[in-house]
Length: 202
Image (cartoon, rainbow, N blue to C red; front, side, top):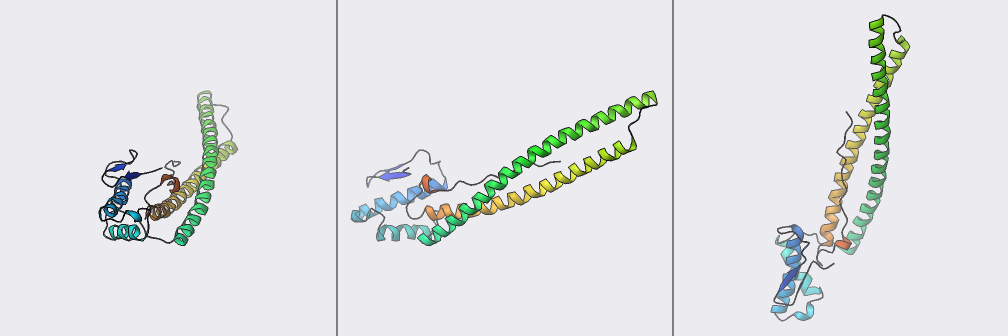
């Protein structure tokens, strides 16, 4: 997908680029280099040749837009690392979702048992007979404690996952900046950032 194009006098940017966004700035700088080269009579270097790269690199070095100059080998190495980590993150995300469903089911079941136990205690107190056994009370207490421990461990797992997602997203941002230089941003070459998990069990 083209982010921009120019005929040497007019620059058109893709409407998907948000105003004042980093992508818009990078695309505009890219197209303006084409305009500049055309203006100085170097239209023959419009296919991102040495002069195009030299001029765009100067803009990059001067901070006109965000990008990272990298070799093809550096891009490939980072992409490989991002892909491997993304696969692990996706697997862990799926595992966390499964565990969350299990914990939710167990929590519902435990809360139902606690409610039933309390109802029995209330009736027994009224009748002064039929109290639940001490063993039942102790088992319910142990099950509740086990559930709380599992929730605590789950929250630690989520925290670790979110930390890994933040690290992955930093690498993804770095890779996307590499891909934005020198050829502009092409959505088909970019990697989407991963989402952290906000839900915690209390």
